[in-house]
Length: 190
Image 1 (cartoon, rainbow, N blue to C red):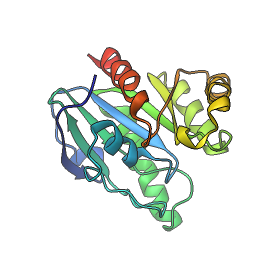
Image 2: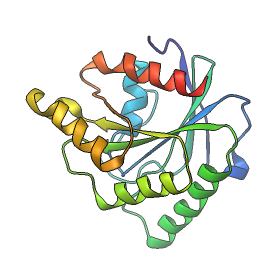
Image 3: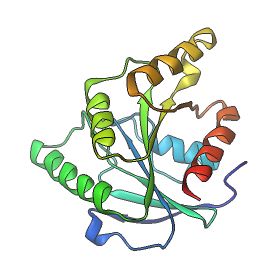
């Protein structure tokens, strides 16, 4: 299974400015610089589709992409460290919470966690928030190619135990994980 056609549609600062596409949507959540934009590029095999950066906090809007004319993927600003003011972070949080709780077309929430590290405090806070609101979610363990092969299964099991959710590995380098992710997404939202 591959994404054959993907395109950027629009960016919006808040829910009231997001167009209604009449298609299921997926929200990408994670710390700043965890690899959400790289995920979009990797899963679509288009390195220029979503803008990536080494500096945290570059994604500041709800960036929407259409996959195979079937569903919408929303790349959201990261939580955690970003080189912006506290008031800007508070504004992001307010706008994102409104989008995440009130967007009727949202069918799946994907939380990204960097596999090179332990699950961070703000990852756990996001996980608790998703569970509290009973939102359908999974975890994608990013940068799995940087984890020694002998430790990948242990890392996935550790993340499953801590987050209490399904965990799928992902790498922008090793495309073998893409099929399982796309199958999971499409089975969850269609």
